[in-house]
Length: 236
Image (spheres, rainbow, N blue to C red):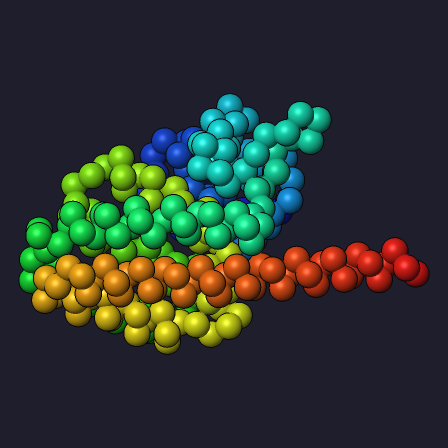
């Protein structure tokens, strides 16, 4: 486990030590530096970030509430992993919630909001770092949803997106899905620009459904490959 490559990206943004710990570990998970099943030793995290163990524990408890890590008796803290079925369930929750957020936001969208979203999409076009791409992708969606002025709804959406974000970044990177994702983003934004509610919601639902089906298929293939490797190892 090496968090030192991530920490410098976060130190200027966060002043609370537990918040800093949570963000560094979260980013390491999202970037795939920490994978499902990896053990997080609190003393090691504290040493790498130059903090005491108390804020480390507080930060990890925050990530536990987000579903990114879990505290297990006698096993310490492990990075959570998701199955294809769990990802399917998350998207089944995300789609209606995000469509509700966009529907509530649309009456409040201004030309300035549309221009800002266009700038984010242009930045995504140029971005080659998958970690930064993930942040920009979240920023595009959140920038539209925030106009709904529903903080509890947005907090729930953010939590669900964070749970699948690490897998989505891997999927996008491996399967070169970025051009299609960008095309879908622009279809959403075009409908938003026209204040066409039915078209915007349909485009968003398609966008999320495509990502869901692709990600579920990817995780199912990974599961089958692991099962096959395990079977071969036992047969030797």
